[in-house]
Picture 1 (cartoon, rainbow, N blue to C red):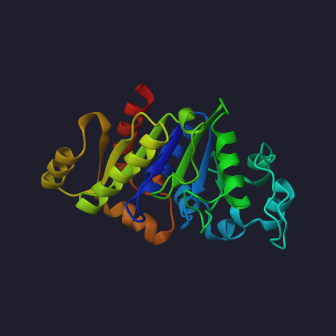
Picture 2 (picture 1 turned 90 degrees about the vertical axis):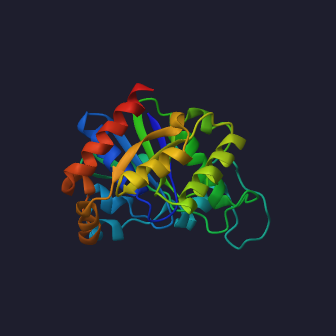
Length: 256
């Protein structure tokens, strides 16, 4: 299973990503959780301590490694570098394990956009492409709202593109933007999880805006999840309510 979870900051995609990762790990699967978000909060949500996470340097910031693998010049002179650097050893070398889940922090490239062909961006794209062809692993990527690190040839390996939204017009617009980008990349379907849903009115709003075939389920507003975030703990370990709702979402994912 290869899953990319995306959405604007603060909507709860890390709660979904981390809980799915823990659920698959509980089944005995080899799970690799990949943090491709500039906020890099996935580790805390998986149960890592702040001290453990402070010791992790995102791959995008490993200048010497990127120079070594791509052949890029450290002084910035010249534009020639390898676009297919060796990356197959990256997960084993740099991933850390907690609660049965391996965490790999890729980070982002601040200058990345549709026209970026910098060594850092090439490195991250190459790593993601490699991860998506690992048949034995469940790979869950916690991404920002854009899909800059994905490209044709990698998206066809994805089993699920999931946008986490809140009950609101701006969040629905994010879903539409991601769906447009995904369509351009050849992704046949983008699914939606609605988080922080408080009442029937919120549910009706979501149902009126999201096509039924794209909708995976609701995660209702839950104070336990808020408390877990305050304490830097895993929602999986604190909120049975949210975990039970994500179990139901996972059943749909697994049956597709």
